[in-house]
Amino acid sequence: MTAPNPLTTHQPAYSLKQLTQYFLKLGTLGFGGPIALVGYMHRDLVEERQWVSEAEYQEGLTLAQVAPGPLAAQLSFYLGYVHYGLLGSALVGIAFVLPSFLMVVALGWAYTLYGGLSWMQAVFYGVGAAVIGIIAISAYKLTRKTVGRDWLLWGIFLVNAVATIVTESERVELILASGFLVWLIKFPPQNWFKQNRLNSFIGVSLVPFLATVPPAPPELLGQIALFFAKAGAFVFGSGLAIVPFLYGGVVKDFNWLNTQQFLDAVAVAMITPGPVVITTGFIGFLVAGFPGACVAAIAMFIPCYLLTIIPAPYFKKHGKNPGISTFVNGVTVAATGAIAGAVVILGRQSLQDIPTLLIGLVTLIALWKLGKKLPEPLIIIVAAIAGLVLYPLIHP
Image (tube, rainbow, N blue to C red; front, side):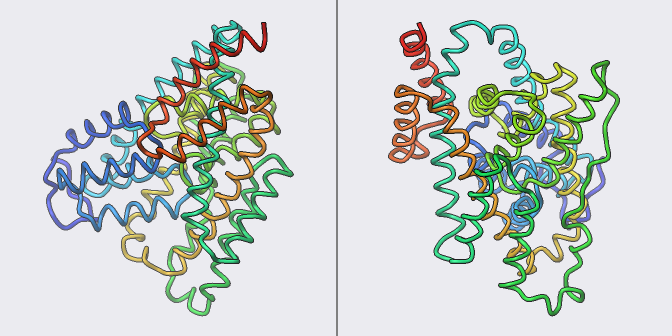
């Protein structure tokens, strides 16, 4: 029998097998992005099954927001850790991520094989434009939720948005500086050294790891590992927050993909269930085949996994520290500004003519009016059909 975890004082009402099966199902069928996924976890595990208490769920959600990396995946790591420790966290994480990883690898294989065909180009002609609308509405909602009417937060938002547009990449150092700036202004540091024991791990880089992989260009696999480990260790915010960071590295710095291929990778993340950042597996496949997909996905998730389970015992005790929540607020606003900047960058590349402008605009309006009633996979399917119809007319 698995020993009880120190985070809880009561015996769990479920087995580790049951929890793993739940996350395997969620990773296979859970559409809608990070906000929807964490909502499913609350509904299923807290409200309906009562496997996890409201307090445990909220602690995990707060830690997932504090630490860099994908929100939904980090919450799953924590919920596995609550009652079943390291083994539970690892099994839950693998079960949650593996289904969508296999899907994006299959899509990457098909994309590589058929990407030169006109029908595939037509599909992504429509899908790429729709993705811009999806990112734009997500940026708008995040902005309304995180910035509010605070002049300081608006300044941080605008600075990060402009910096992303000008440099065409996410400036991690600027985002971290934004968090510390808000912290300094709104929670002066007179008692930091006495009260806050989390300083020792905030900002820790957990990069040095790489499992042995099948033969492939070792220099390229090393670059992939380090880049995606950096993404997992330093990118704050959920879901699409990673888009500007990935664009800056994958397209601008390393020239692994062109802009259209990158937009196609984001589109693949939209049409598959599970965490949005699993697009890293698709990108890795395009760059270095199956070894590249494995290295990219592992490098992305290991740092945020460690940044969730290492501080978990301490966070339960100190997580309500107002200084920490203030830092998170500043970082979240800065990441939202970077997403807004990414909308401009990617929009300039993808909305290249009247049909794509119309697809992007219709997507934006539809999501504005219908919201959660309109699932993103359905939007992608409709946009793909539109692309199949319109692309031959524009590019005969």
